[in-house]
Length: 124
Image (cartoon, rainbow, N blue to C red):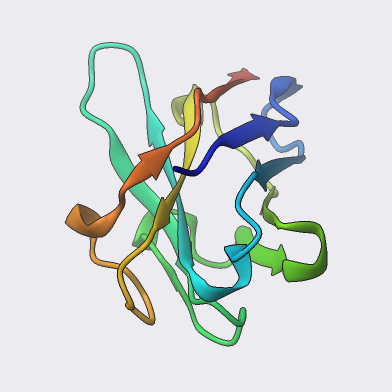
């Protein structure tokens, strides 16, 4: 069992920045691939970014490339999502997730546990 707790969401103006954090309860956190997803009102949850166990490999959805950065601090059992140049259409609940399977980068269907989400609201 893994508990994930996101934080760092809030209200920001378009063009602004936020840094999301996701703290994991499991001691073996450093072994696992992590990801960030988001879900806007009335829409399906979508993939945002993923990172492998060491932080050496990352993947982003095209919409956020060059603006968002996923990173991790295994000593703190925490993964981060730095979001710059935010757009109003990126208003959503942002979720982190962990894959307990031995993936380098987990496929979208490969995540086992999810956090409760943190709300990000981008005003125009």
